[in-house]
Image 1 (cartoon, rainbow, N blue to C red):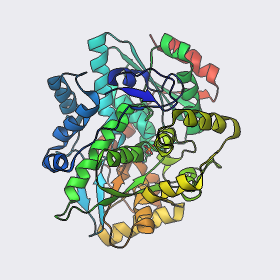
Image 2: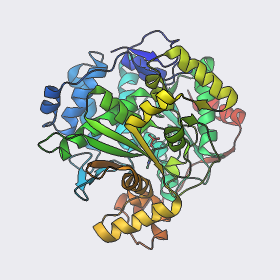
Image 3: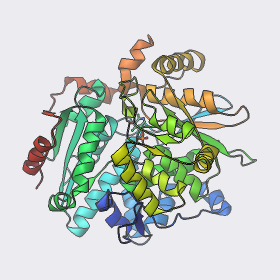
Image 4: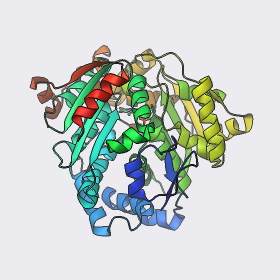
Length: 462
Ligand SMILES: *Cc1c(COP(=O)(O)O)cnc(C)c1O
């Protein structure tokens, strides 16, 4: 499979080069030159597979011969051996209409592990095989950082620096990142928001001289490998809830950077019978407004109970835009340039109708989020984390009465006890999380200043 840029100015490259490039050199995002198609009979075959075997089948469609079969199988086996549930991403039935896809059984208790355990191993594989220097630079709203660090800590040939917004992540998120004391890990706490951190990273990756000199590698969901790894659980969950009449299902997805829901879009485009993709956001509802009104325009930043979704500029949105505009890279490039200049993009009525055919959206306010946690705890004895609660609240708002919906549970409630406590619910922490509170922390607090960050990076990266 070959990969191209949403802005059309990058020569076709293979999968491994696309992973290493991260952000496309023309500032766009990398996507497959064609979306592989999965037939109905293939779907039937796949429905019987284990998570790992299903991942192998899907990955193979994009990776081709670039990684030999046995080595790819080995990478997948290692990546999901760290999960606490034998099914990797089990599905729980809550009601006849609602299923929850639990994506939080990996090492850091959030869905990011599904992709980042794989990407970490993939980077180690490339480093060894191609003698590549891998200096990972990433920004996190909380979960990506811990998960990426867990994916590569102590691995030879790899260094990782993670920027997070100082005091704007949950306590457990902060501890998971900063209690790691490996030489190849650096945590920078930036006095700013996640958008500030992500903006800095985007600028550094767009500076191709700096990027190539320091061998910068991306772990944010601009990296196509992450999207790919996340398509697997859409298929897996669909097979788990599938009944005899092969009805389409909805997916409700707690959304920030549009990475996870884009993986669902890709799964649908591959042939998975998806009816609606329900996009759940919080008070930071740029994407809800886009889907309802066709205007993509960042608003005021809010701190919420679901901090991993406190994002205004969704870096994966451009991938969807590309497909919405019938793969017209020139048009995408001009719209993104306009966005940079004027701060907004407006699509026409026809494209808005096309978007609304597939997507529904609901921005969940704080009170509604907490009410949903309380209600499901009382009525179903199921404790939702605040991100998943947004997903469930959006399901309630947007799901048709005769439709079945799978809500993605993106984190374990123990990661966000600040919100759970507000519902007067007392939870017991899993042992791995309890232990974090006794460990020393390693992080540097820095100003929201690109130059200061660059100086630290130059010292840290080899
Ligand atoms: C990252 C994250 C999200 C948002 O996912 P995107 O791919 O950025 O849309 C939602 N919930 C949790 C818990 C997360 O960590």
